[in-house]
Image 1 (cartoon, rainbow, N blue to C red):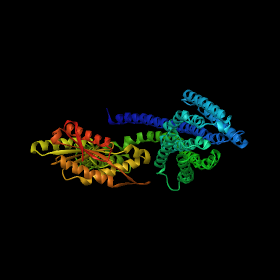
Image 2: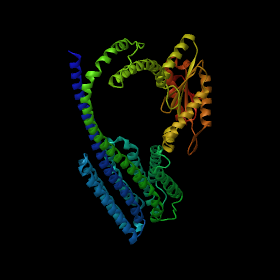
Image 3: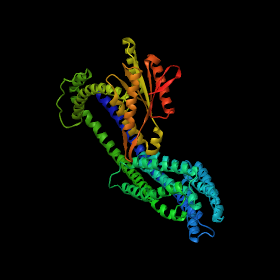
Image 4: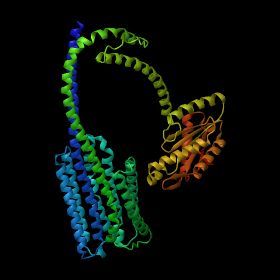
Length: 581
């Protein structure tokens, strides 16, 4: 086939490919427009869902205040309760209308029906208590009524999650704002729940029951976890961002004044049950300082809506530009097919030798000088770029080999503590045991587990747990001799393999390590915390040079140390006996 005919065919193929590519791009941008529109609708549904949760939480305030009144109840108290119930019903009705056409409408309708029924039952229980004289309102009766109201909010959680997933599936970039808004209103609900836990005790003038104290502690833990999650979500925002100001208001008002009031009530409820205020007075002091939480939600949702609107505008603009550009491109391409016939063939022949040399991976072949500033000049430039890229590829291959080695090292290292991980330890330990077998020296294994590590995480957050793990790892690293092996074995467990070491020296090492850990305070934002560890020691005189046997014996000794009271060293011995160091 003649080259001119071949170029004509090639031109036709290019034209077809261009049409297909433009159609694909236009379709993609049209889908982006639809997704952005869907994201905006889903944000509206999410906002209504979060508002319904807020209204349910707000209703508990007037409810708790009314439960503390006698008969007849104060008119302003009953009016506040009626108004709160009307706001809740209105928010639920708006939510029902919003999700009626959502993809998950059937499931949403069923979940909302359950929530409305549960709310109706909870309100009836509250009304039954309100109908009794104050002297007949027992502590368990008030608690049951309060808990019934609190149990309604979780019924809406799946519906809220569905709205959030719907908005993120359309536009994942809204993740921080959507999750942050959900966390903010969840935090508002937990803050209200914490106040509700006090209602029964304040009304009856009693100290907290065991179940109340447990519920209070769980709610406080939930509040602290939500606070930590929100801080992680918001830490990338700039200082001038409205979100930062809104979070500052939350920190100052709720975690300042309101939290201090709650702490005072908790102290009185544990001490003598003399609170010095009524349920209504507590609500009047506590509830207003929760207002920054819905405000934070609104700021985050406003930012999410701004992002979604900007994406919608971008997609529409891009679509228009694609359509306009496609028209121009097709016109230019038709003219280019005529010019290719005249201005490509001759320069193309002259580049043949350079391309053949390049195919042989010869980068020294010279390229022809371009005849003009045209497409052929670009071809010559492209060939020159290929020569450069080939050289760069060689360089990248060398860098790739170096990166593979670096990744191998990283795969054997625990990223949090910097110690070898379990896999690396097992491989190195087998080598040391083989050397011990050849040269006849003794070895000892020390297994260590941080005491009450879950409690540390629950009380101070996972960031505090990570800090403690790093501190313990630094202590282990500082105690090692040259040639000893140490690793993070999993979770809060560490293991050390000591060469040329018998049981007595292994115990001395373990005791020094235990004392070093117990004596070093872990510095946390809330203040220093002491961490202790339980250690178990096993040596090759007991378990031989079998790694599994050594680890099993040391692990059993470590658990005996925990059973014996923690913060101690136990030694594995024959016949299941052990001795404390």
